[in-house]
Image (cartoon, rainbow, N blue to C red):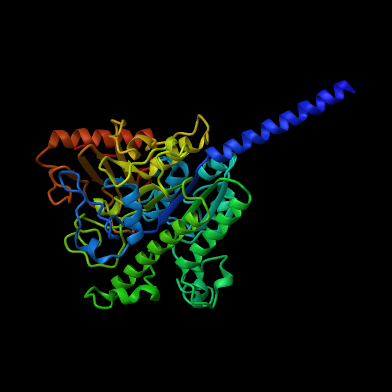
Length: 507
């Protein structure tokens, strides 16, 4: 009898200790929101992200045109990066967020066509057009294993039809709302069933039937669903990872009627006015999510990472390469900075310097970080903050942003960003680029013409108006060698012509 009492006491003690441990874990694991906007470039916002030579953000005409007060709020209470890089098209960036790997390493080097292999004429035949799989090491799966409720809302685009990556549930998400193989919506309108009733039916958004036939704009529907998913996670008393991936501001440029009055007197083209309503709708979504978290006591323990997935695709005319990303040169799918630089803001929903949780990742307020950050950095940063552990043999290409989010200079002295696009049929075809320090080299593969190099000093020429390749042959050679090393280390696949890979030709 005495032994039985001891056993019961021991058992109760173990249960108590286990419960306390679980409670402690819940209290020390922050909620994470990755708020991703499709095709939102650096200038598609009223928040200035382009800095002058002193590092101070400067407003340009496009910043004056767009209305994003909630982005302004988030930047005001957190930190924005003026040099944050993503891949030039969507699926490579999205796969990089999930894996922490550069596209040259994970092999998703082009956007994924839902129906077939869009290798393009000279593209590498073995590129990873099937995308992510059940075997992939992904951020949501690691967070799932660390005790998180993992929620996917919106655009996925991780794999084609009938692939494992088509369904986000296969890559570690507990919940999938509206995510599939499609890269843009058949329609933004609830009256159209988001493509099921009217519009492009092959790109109809799945899983939102309760809004069909209503006036609920797609961005609003996703926001409502995200709030419901957060509520369920709270009921389950689990920390959550919300990947809120809006279909906006990708084409089709359907007007969000809630905001059209704000642009009726503008002399901008009609499609650009429509685009501005898409931007403002996403901004409202951000504000609604923030308000919901505050109203439900989830604000001090929730981190928001706001970003775009590639350069702007706003429907503005291009003149000498300048247009929707002006003053940056280029746009989505291009090799210049306007195709690679995206907005990035990090903030706790309600900053509190005394919060024990926030002390794990101090984020400077009203701050600007001018050093380089990349989409590759989200994976290690979130893993470090949450205690998620990835396998030792999983190679990553990013670095934790912990130091830079505090406003301090980066402790990564080798900061660089490789963008590898060995495909055609886009705004720029068959190229690789490397940004390292203040130098940028762009290599154009000789698929039909001779090899071409572009070389820019981004410190003295941030808008890439002066190609200095002929003036700096030795520095160009060094940067080309660095580009070759980057591609080789990641086992990159090159364009192919007549059955032969077109590896780099040195100047």
